[in-house]
Length: 230
Length: 230
DNA sequence: ACCTGAACACCGTTCAAGT
DNA sequence: ACCTGAACACCGTTCAAGT
Image 1 (cartoon, each protein chain N blue to C red):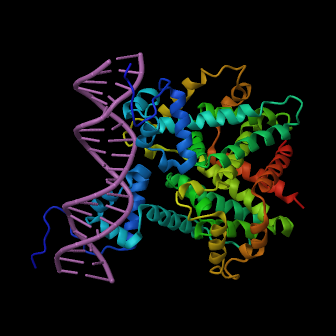
Image 2 (image 1 turned 135 degrees about the vertical axis):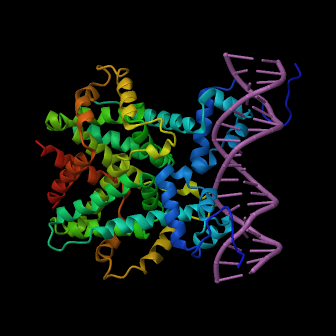
């Protein structure tokens, strides 16, 4: 008895690796990468900084682990459907990643970083395997399988990263999406039509398009191009 | 007279915005984003930290400005050729970006970040305009111009970011490209052929392919797909 | 084995003070 | 107008010490 601690809720459960990762994801979702500090973590978990290093290693390791957790979960949530057409299966994986980044914007940077730095880690391999297995069924000859899968992964991760909304970076409520578009409209005035004819030609499309639909349109273009690769 | 300073080369030129940006790029190229600190900058420029804030603002602003400088230069180095086919012009822009990131790996992260956070900044608009102006000539109907240009930009920036080599992140000489591939080969042993049939099918292609060639192959697939968008 | 938390060596940024 | 550099409020990481 007498182990009470008046000003912090007692941990009724031993500190686990899972709980650290889960808390890290919460912080990342709420405030972006800058908000996930050792001190913020230790405060939420009411523990010491050493405990985190003991369980998950450095901050960078924790970021990688969190990314791995979410990507693996996103892929697992949409299991392979043997009956689906190859295009549908690829679309399903693409949308799973699109939605994961929508929910966790900080994933955009980290996902690309893992592909670059850990080309044979579970994230990169997981995505490649799921997509690659379909290119044969798409009619791509085996000699071009790696090229085809790479093209798809490059596009999907590129599109998904570039469609990130970055509200998490502005912790004060200063930037609603609406204000952002207003500032954007103002910036347009500085682009004269002679220097930027294309931008002026598509300005209406920019303000009325849907990111997700456009993402799928692009994917369809690539799938179409791939079927002619033979 | 008598303004000599014995232990640091005297500035024979007043501190300029350009010199700060140039020095920042040198630091970034040599050691990645982590190496470009205020203190490293002030030491190289033998000045105080306030001077940098006076000229270029925050570290984040400096990173953006450096990115802007390099991307603008890369695009300007390959001027529009009126005689070229639309595919050639797009390829030219794509390769300019590919080469810029090869020379400055830290650009990968920053380029995507600018597209996300400054969709109407000079970097995003510059790339979009150069690529977008060609899609009409490619045979894409006007209603699909924005979709077509987006697809190209998503792919190009995605591929170019994912092809980054990250030697700058390891300041010690611990990771040659060769050692990296060796470690990679070891990691392969952990992937059994039943769980990862696709990865096993393409392992030879992975080790023999050329990034730049593969990048162009993917681009050709997309250009082909776009011509059928009508 | 697992956790604590003070200590260390850094950061970016600000700002009174100088010229 | 332009620059200095001490000071401030943070970081990530380590490690002796505790249980």
